[in-house]
Length: 133
Ligand code: DAT
Ligand code: MG
Image (tube, rainbow, N blue to C red; front, side, top):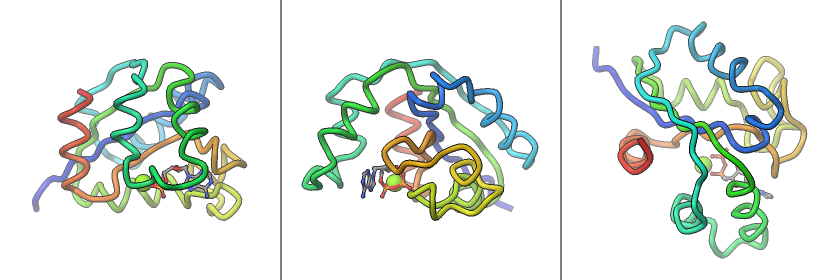
């Protein structure tokens, strides 16, 4: 079967709260393979590019401020079906709607502090990995 790849980013709150090991563990325990990792201070321009689809939203300025507020952990992960599977492990965008057992469901309460990003398509995953790692 075709092996897929996705881009996972631990957001500044996840790093600051000491959740890096916990989040990496969840992907490792699932059986996915870590193929790239870096601690990174995201420049404002790259944050704006990363979230360009949301640029007209009222929360866009605070989203950019949040993502650039401290170091993030950029990762590439590989595995069969990993793009949708990683999104399942991460849980719903609003942590209050995320199921228990998911990263956001277990570790977060606010949409604006939802600890982790996962690519929403294989194409975006490839692009995000290429641009950040
Ligand atoms: P996801 O991160 O689950 O892919 P998304 O791509 O729709 O969700 O949005 C990207 C990020 O933008 C999300 O993780 C947090 C922020 N965001 C989305 N909707 C929001 C809202 N209604 N209020 C505040 N922040 C929001
Ligand atoms: Mg998204």
